Length: 250
Image 1 (cartoon, rainbow, N blue to C red):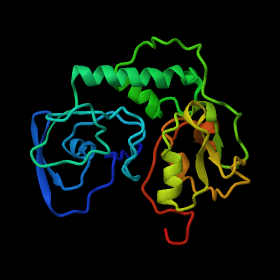
Image 2 (image 1 turned 30 degrees about the vertical axis):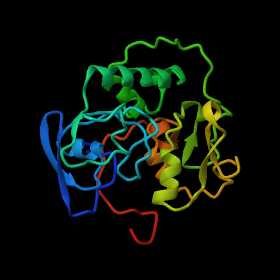
Image 3 (image 1 turned 135 degrees about the vertical axis):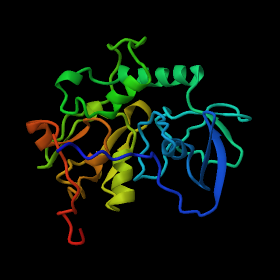
């Protein structure tokens, strides 16, 4: 038995019945009005690089990896926050986009610990995957610059650890806590380069309003939030589809 493969379309499905037809990379695509370009492309089999996007969360547009080119529009809008429109002509893979994505990824990696081989998320890390997708092989800025704030690991929760040094501030954990669970236990503290995920008023996870539901761990694209069982035993070798054993409604 292997891991159950689930496709992440990047943004939630539109519930609008009216459809529009557009062109993505030379192919005609029909999608419900309100669908993001990212989801429309994924539904036709074209995966656009992303880090902050997930189909269980509303579009956020912070990672800047999912940029696309649209004929008649200036700049490179984020595909996760740009809805499809009738007659729209979109390009997801051009030399210009490749340069931009690679440059963005260089910034992420220059600020990230280089411990992939010993990291508990090695082989199951979206940052690692996206670095490969954009073709990053070297970082022009080096690896000895100022690093992201690291107040130290938080291992207070019995089920998972929080390592802020590996955080890319994509806010997926914060958004999952708010939008999926409605707990509102997490926030982003600080501004700019000093931004870090903070449970409550900069408390530990165990002391905060966190209910250990695991939504933030599931949403995290790196090893910032990781299950202690995964750290101890390694990445799961197989998975099954079942109901949630945590709550009373499954």
